[in-house]
Length: 447
Length: 178
Image (cartoon, rainbow over all chains, first blue to last red; front, side, top):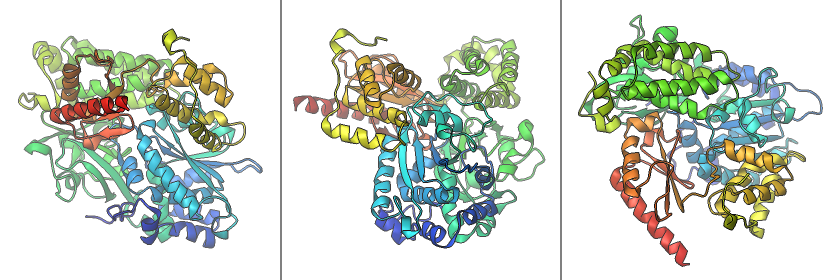
């Protein structure tokens, strides 16, 4: 198995406690940063590392940090986005519940770099037990002088606390997260102004994903250049992939970016292949928002080269024949799974989670769900398939936040690659209606 | 806004111990930004006041934070975790989103519907269980799963669900004897 930077000590008994975490070298990055580096030095290391946002967008973290406005006398905030809600994604939860101090250490080092004296971790409300784990770890960090006033005698002060959401996917969008943290409905804000200029309570704010902040720890410990040696091209470092669906070994894996998709799915070191001896039908490699890939485009690109677990390789071919690394929510479908049903399921998800602020998204996601529902249940007609594509175009790019795009892309991709399956539902309505899917459908594979 | 009957309109009150906790949470935010504590306090209120947010409960929370009741209603109705109708004693929320569906969540939902004699959203005749579905709960590799209170129950089978229902029934009858 590859090297591990984030999950190296995950199996050490008691790693969730301060004592054990510290014994395995924990909090070294805070010591190094506060004692030997200026905040700007830390930012430079992160820039040199090539680290890209691990929440899904893949935006260079160092660049995001460099945008942070620093007006005199105005507080700045670092917010950790632990609102992990993208279907297929459960890596942040794994990291936080198993090794909470790693996130806290990353928060301290990153807050120092950005000049924040108050930082928050915004965690989805359903992870309430993880919030309790984090609060316990934060209390330990305070008790041992890593948080509070004058940390390590450096003169640097930092307070850190955790805030829960209430069950809303949209709050993973950074401006919705900020609204929610202000105690309001999670309606995304129009950008600009960007959070880097006007974020939490109108102050300059950086919002970073859990894994991104955790990655700052090895970057500061070993240097950005060392981190950048891992991976290929602009996909540097290691990435947590949460693999799920019809796999022999679903779970959270840390891998060097650049291994092949084929190795990741089939090797016993990783996912161990498709469950129950079935064949691969399709894969959504980066969370439900990214385009689905049919089996022939999962392990190879349209040009026939090996597909790699990197931002670039997964996107190769654009939306015609590629997808995205996204959040690393890697969803695998076996040969018995129904693409129409899955597409309807995801459409229902987005319709449910649309905040309702922008009409194209509020109405469009609902229409898509209804159209897909009638296709799935054998009441559709062939025009519906093109109608979906039409609705798609009306949503895409016409909303304040990317939820609209995220709802539109998977539908467009499913139709692009599996049109005949949608048509089959129209031409075989009786069978489509009789079908039960998931495990129950194993004995009636789709033709 | 009304969401309950007159019998429920009893003014709630956090215990002194809980008020210390509430104050700790409020203090996590700068002066004048106490509204940020709202969501956390609503979660606590649900826990303490029967698993849901009645209008008196929401008004009470508004009073604690010195904000308008409408500001609380807005939040309570936006976020799906908050119950603004009184649910059964035990609320079961089964994840229904793609990755869980791929590994059989539909079967778990059907099984629960049959066992409890309810549709999704309904409460069993004995008032014990409310069955809900939820969108992705971040347990995609461990599905099918359901959430009950703060706990995730993962890798579900119909047998496991039956055992869980028994456990919940026992737990509840014990706690009501106390």
